[in-house]
Length: 402
Image 1: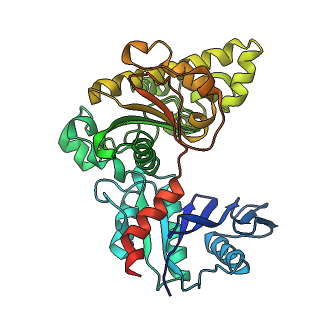
Image 2: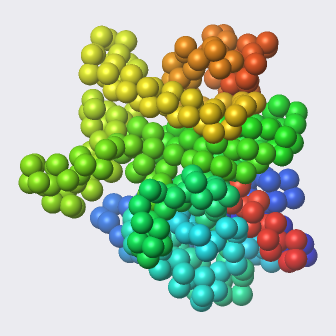
Image 3: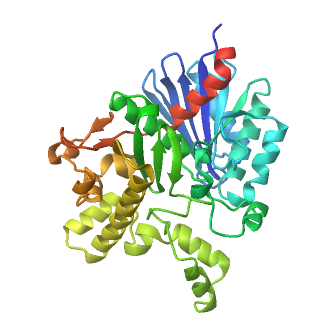
């Protein structure tokens, strides 16, 4: 029997997202989420896509092992369980792969050890990713487990873009460099944008703007990343929902010395209490736009700061690439907030950028152009699909040999 199915797992510290796909036609068979694992009110929401049946269960889910077993039971109820002979592999999102992992990798003990070594530079993500992998390995030790790394797409950056201007020996000792994140999204979206333009990825230069609660930009030349906004951690770069993005490092020293704040307090401030939330008390762009429409000056300032940073990165990456075929918006804000797209390119007509008001206002879940037909540079909206990208990379590595 042909093994054509891939289960994609995205393990967070207290959550487990999953999708089961049939790679013959990239069709989703089931999707779901287990949240609040180990807490008092855990919940599992499961949808069988083929039947449209959605089920929820609330009850004790003590850990990721129990969560994955509960997921396996739901899949089995739909006849697509983990014991299915059609299952080719399980693909895992792993946030940080450092420089060691530049492509999807079948997990073994050495791979687990290296992912664990990277925990200090991804303390919020890699431990949860490891838990998900180990749990899946215990349930299906005979099945290939494939790690797909957020950082892998960005390992093509030249050293001039990846290095910080500090002592290289010190940087190498502590693995300090710019790694970038959201790589599966940037890879998928840049490739889909080339398809939208009727060209191959090798023939186009694209600026990808992944704008969600976390946000990042990338400059992609000929299908390869040459620069990206996130750095050693996901804190660097654009203004985000709760993260500050770019910041003078001396602000940290000032907050410690003058403000009397501890390193942990500053870390929490910059990652969880800054960005749009820190500026106006909201990190939901819909709510911010509503407040602006009602004349809220603080919300308007937050939006202006957000857009200003976005424009700076568009201009910077235009310069890095030399010429640009498309600027593409993706993720929750990028795909749905027409006001963000309009504001981000307003005033950049000299760079060949503009949006058509009517096209930009249309809500659609398909890749589309929102720039005028005669625009020198295309402005596009391309819905991201990180789960499909993980499944595709996983299946390309092991599925065809199954």
